Length: 114
Image 1: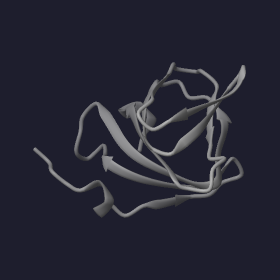
Image 2: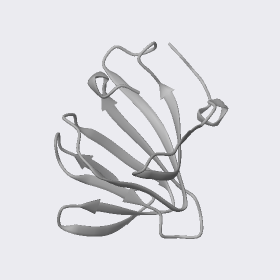
Image 3: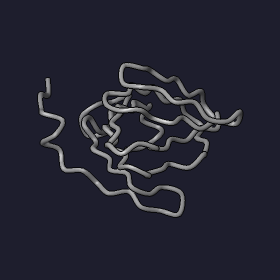
Image 4: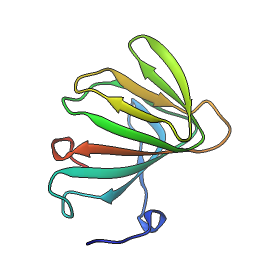
């Protein structure tokens, strides 16, 4: 069994052409689990993960704040306590349109890496 505090894990800044204002903490990674990866994302105000696809599913749980979810049909705002299931190859993205950080857990199968 592995026990750790999520906020003791050092965040990694993610900054690409399609991701801005986002930090990721790999809470349970490939060295620890055989089948899944658990990550904690922090999206700063005005931060964004642009629409994209992956061949694996995502299970997401919003821990803090209001998250704008982006898909092919448009946008929808969800709040803390909401869960999101993203099917394999489904277009998805996320944006923080608020003045406070948004945090969410994202679980993916090992094929998705960390």
